[in-house]
Structure formats: structure tokens, C-alpha cells
Amino acid sequence: GAGVSQSPSNKVTEKGKDVELRCDPISGHTALYWYRQSLGQGLEFLIYFQGNSAPDKSGLPSDRFSAERTGGSVSTLTIQRTQQEDSAVYLCASSDRKGPPINYGYTFGSGTRLTVV
Amino acid sequence: DQQVKQNSPSLSVQEGRISILNCDYTNSMFDYFLWYKKYPAEGPTFLISISSIKDKNEDGRFTVFLNKSAKHLSLHIVPSQPGDSAVYFCAASENTDKLIFGTGTRLQVFP
Image (cartoon, rainbow over all chains, first blue to last red; front, side, top):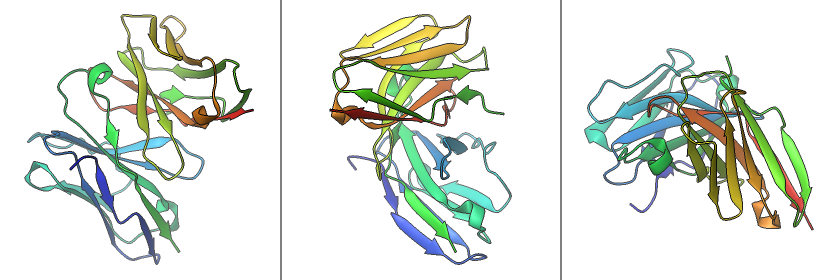
């Protein structure tokens, strides 16, 4: 597609439920990243997929968080047993990695606003 | 451990004047620095970047300055326009790895 697409745009869930957030990156982009922005906070790195390499999961805040990237394209971020502190905007980005960051930069989606009540 | 810091949460500037947004970092291994702009309900968009081998990069009204000895970079916008009102994020990368973002500065440009 023309840009990075995320769904749903908004999600309200009850505490303790599981949620799945979806990201469709730009076609052909080999790198995919998940970030989240909590209220009043910056962009917190969660996880990074690059081609067929093992993902960099160093930013996942707990084992309730997991992510997959199927076929090197679509990615799903899953949060199990959601807590109120999980409420945030979850942003996905992709890049083509054809050069250093100075040349490629990320293209972000509009995000999924998750509210845990 | 906040490796990229933006200590000013907000900045208000009159239209036509210069806006200066600041960013500090702690990791001396960072070799690329970028600025992103974010409007409400939208994803951040890439604005300008600089390699650690340079100390200045200019693109139209936007200039980024890098002071490696001070581990400090700044974004200058001149002249500032009302459409520049947004949240600006500083980001850094080590060896083309993932970007580490700061907490953002909300810029408001008033007429």
C-alpha cells in the first residue's frame, strides 16, 4: 500500500482481556518496528523485525507482550491480560533499510489508541 | 535509562521568529540523529537528520546542529510558521539499529 496501515485505530478493552493490534507495512519494506506512546511520554521502543533475522525484543515491557511478523509483511502485536498501564498509542513503522537512517528514516502509521478500562 | 532527552516539554514562539528545540543524549556510540514532527492523531513524520561526522545540516527553514563533545543537538526553524505547531521528537541510532526517541517538545507558533 501507499503507507503504513494500522488497525484498529481505536480499541477499548476491559482489564484482563487480550488484544491484538495489526500493522500492514509499506510493500517491500524489510524492517518493521513497534513503538508506544503513553500519555505525556516519548516514543518507547518495543520490538523490531528485520527480514528473516531474529527480532529484537529488548523493548517489550513484560512477557504479556508478544509480536509476530508473518511472511515478512503483516505484523501483529498481542497484549495478554491487559492492564490499565498498557493504555497508550501503539505505533508501527517500516523502512526499506537501503541506507543508513539519514537516508531512509521510518514511515509511521497513524497508530492504534488502546484504552484499558 | 533515558538515552535521548528533551528537557523542554513545550515551547511557544511568535510567527516569523526562530524556534530552537534542544535534545541531549548520553550514548557516545550514536552515529545518526533525526528529528520527527507529529501532529495529533497522526504518526510522526521524518523532518531532517544528521550524521555524527557532520555538525550542521540545513533543509530550507530547518537546520540541525550537532555538538558531539556536549552530546547535544538542536533544531532551528526560521522563520517559524503557525503550521509548524506540532510535537517534535529527537531520535538517535547506533550503527543503523533501531531509533531511540526522546520525550518530545510541543511547539506552538502564535500569530
